[in-house]
Every structure is written in structure tokens, then in C-alpha cells.
Amino acid sequence: MIIIGERINGGFKDIAQAVKEKDKSVIEKWAKRQTEAGADYVDVNIGAVSNKVEDFLWMIETTQNAVDTPISIDSNKLEFVKRALETCIKEPIINSTTAHEEKLEQLVPLAVEHNASLIGVCMDEKGSPQDVNRRVELGAKIFVSATE
Image (tube, rainbow, N blue to C red):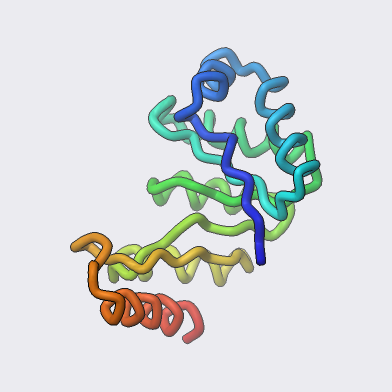
């Protein structure tokens, strides 16, 4: 099992404020707490706090300077993911892709190029299927795409 700490997220008020003020201490505190609690990866997600890739990279760099734990790159913006992959010191996880063809075509090659793992979510452009068989199909599609 892989444990991913997901507290460095711009959806939390203290993280949002830290990003706006460039207060490293808040990011560092949560990176250390999650690592000490056993996280194998520390997820970094800027959320709606900023549309600037530089702010996202600042979060990643601050996290990496605080702990030796690899990063889980959590963004739905392709440019943010690309730049983050170039910034990560240790092999990261991309969090995440769906079975949507366009996302797979974009993220799988990036994961391969940067030797990053990839979290697959069993949904597509229509959302998360209610039918378990359809979810299995989508999971298989992601798996096949990632292992070709």
C-alpha cells in the first residue's frame, strides 16, 4: 500500500494564505507532519489559490526542501504537471488521470519520460460509472495505456 498525504492543498485556508504570502513555514510544517505520520508521498495541489505555475512550483520546492519524501503532483493543468515533473527531485506520482482518451494521451508519455508513477481513476469524460463492470473496463483501459 502507498500512503499519500494530501494536506498541502490550496483548498485549506492556511495553505491558501501561505501561498499568497509565500510563507514557507506552513508548507514545511505540513510536509513534515505528513512524512512523520508515515506518508510515502506528499501531495501538492494549488487548487484555486493561483493560476500561476510559479506558485505551484514554489509549493513543490518548499515541500522538497522540508522533507525527503517524493511528491505527488496534483493538478488538472497540463502545463503545471509538465513543469512540476521537471522540478521534482525524486520520482513523483502524477495524481491523476482518468480513462478519458485525451488525458491518457497527454499524461502517460509524460509519466514514462520522467519515470513517474501515475494514479488512474476509473472514470471517463462521462464521469464515474455506476456500473462496476464499466469501472473495471475503464481501469483496464488505463492500465493497458500505461503499460504499452
